Image 1: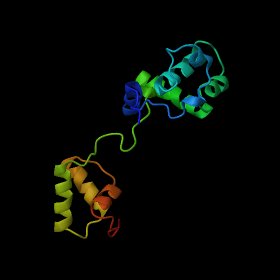
Image 2: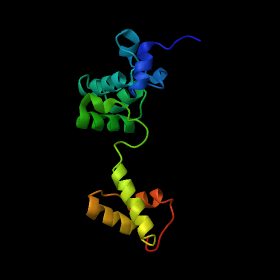
Image 3: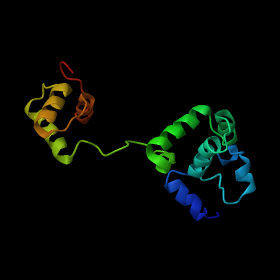
Length: 152
């Protein structure tokens, strides 16, 4: 089995590998080796540039670069808010760290064992007051096995 090219592995690891490079039909990607349709960040950037600099219509650039108009506008918004880093696809799963630290998890478990009749909302309110950790009642309910408590 042939080894994957290092650039391809890198792009995949960084969330920048274009899963459908065959959809990119923009002439610039066909004429110049510098442009790589496997590099989704480059494809997105060039799509935005083609509209902003070359004055091509959104419909034309979305089609030529293999995206929908809706995706074009989502890419534009991501670029406007985060620059080039906004062009990298987000990783699957939770976008940031959990609010529930080990200390907060132990606290919830202790409160639940001391007062098993408290509902998720009540525990979440106490957690916010006592430890300053603000979570939704469903987070507490999931931690406690999903059992719905009274007034939950």
